[in-house]
Every structure is written in structure tokens, then in C-alpha cells.
Image (cartoon, rainbow, N blue to C red; front, side, top):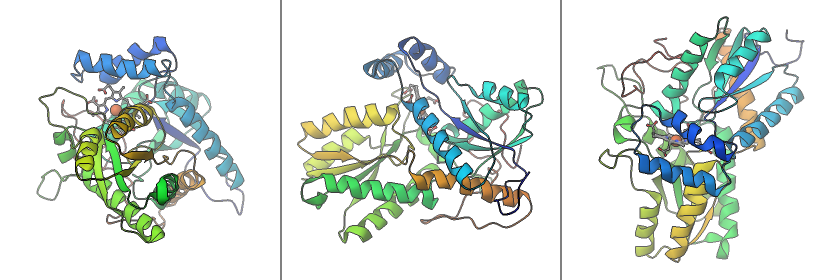
Length: 371
Ligand SMILES: CC1=C(CCC(=O)O)c2cc3nc(cc4[nH]c(cc5[nH]c(cc1n2)c(C)c5CCC(=O)O)c(CCC(=O)O)c4C)C(CCC(=O)O)=C3C
Ligand SMILES: [Fe+2]
């Protein structure tokens, strides 16, 4: 299965790219929102607002096209490196669905696949929910292949380096190369309770948060590198977008729009918005940042530009190959090097016991120490 001189991907015979999914036409929008929010207690008004965000873009999210473009680049990169590994695409919330991808893998005789998710950080929403959906899809698919979810990559150089370059390009778009710019890193808000339980349990069985510390590690590392490259001392912040849920439930703050108000009060006149929580320019980026937060900045008289997401940057694409080869080696009993930058070590191949619990009660999940 592996010609001499070619990187060894044994025991894998496929790669599955697992993503969130998004609507592709106006008729998809409401059923998509129903899929995402089933049983999540999201207020009706919030759903109507979010529906409007999609309708503003013709009822089509760019996320599926972005994932198809990423997969095309991954396929090219694998082929260029002599790796013969078919790539499948499945979404949690919209067509092409995960269950359909698994059925196709069964039809093609796939036995064991590595799984790359388009979500880089730990929390129920960004990690365990993906693992629960993998467990559900496998349970529904007779003969489903064994699936190994690749480790979290928020601190992989293949993710960090493209973001650093994107910040530098964004600074260059501002007057005087953005010399007074604040770097405003933005990620998806989640309920504070979800954030507090986002890591594994400590030895005493207490929850250890991961979502915010992982973001802190990533943003401090990007900012450090940007400042090293510019020779300046840009200040930076970590703020949040896309808050949902009931108003009475606390979510991570500050919201990016409120933060811009604060910055304007402090006399900040230039901002680079960096969507550090996202890997492509999907709806949270093109609506919550490019549309809403940009309008806020304009109203406040702040010159703002938005840094690009990792998207199909060659280093991000190569990271996917690296992660597959790293995990394949580990599964063969070797001790591969595990690149990681910033203040936290590389994440584990298997999620820890009790990590990122589902607030609605325990559900089966794949790819953990306890599954
Ligand atoms: C952490 C996180 C990520 C990043 C990690 C990852 O990428 O997974 C993310 C990504 C995304 N979220 C997306 C879309 C939505 N998220 C929603 C709702 C929620 N997201 C949450 C968290 C996250 N979400 C949470 C805690 C909720 C509340 C409901 C619940 O407790 O489960 C809702 C319902 C409406 C609303 O409540 O806003 C929608 C439509 C899309 C697709 C975009 C497109 O179509 O282009 C993407 C990539
Ligand atoms: Fe979301």
C-alpha cells in the first residue's frame, strides 16, 4: 500500500474532512438553522436574526465551497508528496452530510480513516460535539470504518504562520503601515460554563478550562511574531463574536463591537481584526466581522481591516498532511515529532476523560480515552 520512498500513511486508507456545514440556497436556511439548534434552546428572535445574515448573502454560506477548495488543495498536496489517500467530505449540519460520507467510505472499502476537523480548539461546541456526531454516524452505518480524529491544531505552526503573515499584510493596508494599530483577535463566544469545562479533568476530577487558554496561547504567539517582524509593540486583545443563547446565560465577553467602543474611547484609531477562532471566511467572518463589526468601527471613526483566515494557505494545507503522517506514525508505535508553538504543549491524540462535557448530559463520543 506504500511504495518505497513514499511517506507511510499506514494504517490509514482515507482522510475525512469533517466540518460544520452551511446552507447553499435560500430554501436551505431555515432547515439548516433547525439542524444546528435542535434541542439547544436558542431564542426564536436570535434564529430570525441569524437567518437574515444568511439571506443578506443570497441564502448561501461560503463554507462548503471553502471546504471543497481546501480539499482540492489537500488532494494536490498529498499527490505531490506521493501519498495515495482518498479524501472524503462530511458535515455535521448540512449536505454533504457526515453520514453520507461514511456510507460512501463503506462502499469504497475504507477500513480506517484519519479525521481532520475544521475546528481548531477544545470545547463541547468545537470538539466534543464533532466527536458525538462521529459516534452517531458510525452507529448508524453498518461496517463503518474506524475513525481517528487528528489532534487540535490551534498551536501548530501550519496554523499560526499563515495568521502571522495575514496580520502583516493587513497592517500594510492601513495608513503608515498600521503603526498605531491594535491587534483585535476575535473568536466565537461560547457560554462561560462551556468554556470552564472545555478541557480534561485534573487529577482531582475538577474541570480544567482549555478554550480560552488555547486562544490566549495562539494570540500571544501571533502577536509576539508580528511585533518581532514589524519591530513595533502592537498591543493586542482577545474578544468574542456571534454570541447566541438566552440573554440570561453568561457567554464569554467582551463582544467585539463593545470592545471597539472601548478602544475608540481610549483613542485607538487603527485596528486589525484577526479571526483567530476560524479557519475560513464563513458566515461568522463575513457577517459578524466584515459586516457588523466593520460598521461599528466605521461609526466610531476607527480605521479597521480584517486579516485573512488560514483558508487554503499552503502551510495550512501541508499541516493537514503533517498531522496525518504524525498520527499514522504514532499508531504504528513510533514517536513522531509533534510541532507546537506558543505556551501550551501539543494536544493529545485522544481527548481526555470527561473533557468538554455536554451540558445536556453524557452522550457517546468517539476519539477519546474513554471511548
Ligand atoms: C465555538 C464555535 C464555533 C467555532 C468552531 C467550529 O467551527 O466548529 C462555531 C462555528 C460555526 N458556527 C456556525 C453556525 C452557527 N452556530 C450557531 C450556534 C452556536 N455556535 C456555537 C459555537 C461555535 N460555532 C454555539 C455555542 C452556538 C449556540 C448553540 C449551541 O449551544 O449549540 C448557529 C445557530 C444560530 C445562533 O445561535 O447563532 C449557527 C447558524 C458555522 C457555520 C457558518 C456558515 O454557515 O458559514 C460555523 C463554522
Ligand atoms: Fe456556531
